[in-house]
Length: 227
Image 1 (cartoon, rainbow, N blue to C red):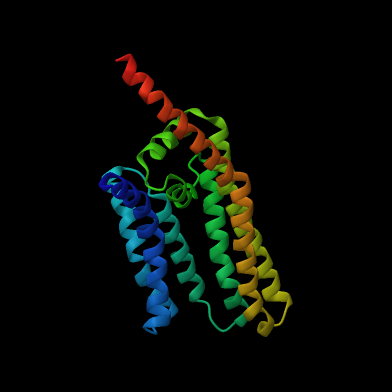
Image 2: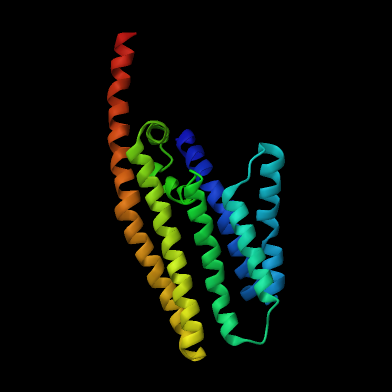
């Protein structure tokens, strides 16, 4: 039980530290404590900045999620410096979506799909056998790696499409309409991303993972008998 709990915690920690903490800090500072958007973005950038710097110094590698959140916050800071145009302010959030979408697609092109960090804990479920099966599939199954890439590609494409729709809407529709329609577009985009990425990525990966876990469980007793 302790091993399972520790494994689950290890899988969730990057997602919590790199994504949940900076995003939660932003909304707490801005909406909860009433700080300015500029101040909230600046302070919420501290954690991803430290994580990115630490990974470079300690691990000699860039932490993808932390670096992406840091870039998003910097973009938000730069856009927040431009004031006085309500349509530009409506388009600002879609600019953040585009940065995330581009970052995800670049990570796929580099062979390190960024959305895997958010998906893996839900498929592995903190189970050691599933963790081992995941490692075997990632190293030896081209189909598994293709499904992993498809999952991230779907999210990257959907986020870019959402960005385009919201920018077009911000400059073609009335400001009052886009105040509520922007949220609707975002919700619909998230729903589409969940459904499509699940169908072409997470679903096939889950089935392969279950099959590999079972085959691993069957092979272990045979190895034990051979000894």
